[in-house]
Length: 611
Image (cartoon, rainbow, N blue to C red; front, side):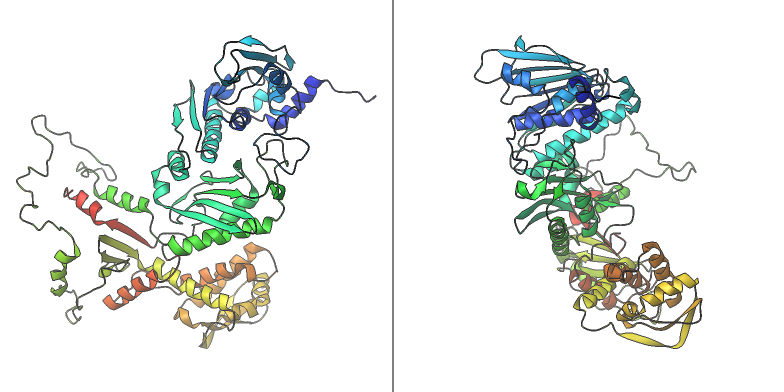
């Protein structure tokens, strides 16, 4: 078969397969063009999930009739010259508009600020006419109707209108995060109107618009720089996490990207602090010389390639871990609000049905409860300080009754001025209740001690000068395991010995445990070795434990922590609190669960109608 030149329309339709994947791709390209044109207000209207209509209106610089004629032709652009290493705009390929026009009905209306007349051009299925005069405000209106009408087979791969509309919303959210100085308005017959007013240089205010106030209350600011690469943004505390990675946003030189390297760096930064199956929330912005990053990897421009990926990954991991070490051990405010909300729920139903709540309507003639006018109001006769430390101090000298007649009475407890306060009680032999200067804290003693032991392991491992102290077993523990599991364990016996775990081969299908880490005390050594064998089988590599030592340390720490159900003395509880305050990352255990929840005095008083 003879080789022949494809028609321009067919070439555009082929290009559209990469550039225009779905309606959200069209919105992304058109919004990027509006931002590049200097727009400060961008309105997006859709219908039918974007398949019926997409209209993007901006107040940017606009285009001349000649610009309109060139804009719908392939590889015509005003954004770059001949240097692909110096790309400072979102768009640069010159493919978006001709690709859209080849598969849909496209109309562009535009007017420049210094012109008294606008012009429009129409493209349908790749066929376009000359630009003609039209009434228009300053800026550009791009209207896309009947997407993929020229390639109906593509419509079979579209999702439901709701799903396509949701994808468009996500694109607009990402663009809004990237450009807080631009107002974005998203509306249409297929959605609820969204309005993101411009916030100027206040990026945190824009983040609050997109991710909600909860994130801003639980976020840590990032500002790091290394070898010409700058990282800014906000990362959530580990206990503020989500069930998927959709709340992770990354920008490179202002360009929203979804890059595997950045996602992997974020996972590494939160390793051992976020539970399995949960994902951290973060907004990361990377700025660097355009010559150090390639944005021309794919026509969609959502993937990038860094000249030094190790530098970028190390910067992200190091900056986030340092920020978490300084501030990340605080408890999530969401947990405290959830606890307060559970206390203030309506009265339980007394109709015998478990798990249900019933709310009784107020009697028509009875006014709502007013704390200021209530005859049972306790505030008039009580000191105004309420639950303040000064008013509670006299209770320190009261001898509380004990269920154990021979148990000594605890001395007065001080230390409420500490961040985690002074221990006041142990509840259900697992939770420590402490009083702070402005509230109370509930600590999960097992989760907290687990983190402390893990950090002690990690500190010793990082020092690397000598192995951890071990204690020999009077009678070695024998663990029966499959032969391949024994092989893996013995292969790493020297590395495990550095952690204080001494093992030897005991026949083809057994392991003898002769030493355990001294800091763990009495542990179930057999169960620990079985878990380590299972984890090594999952890793499926023989490169040593160097990259897995944190995970091994976390597993071992879990076996040596204060168990639930152990009754602690007051001095032990307070010692645990002081150690938590001095340990980075103590706000969550090795599995990412919170170790404590803080309830402020204002929240407590609100529950009792005192504020």
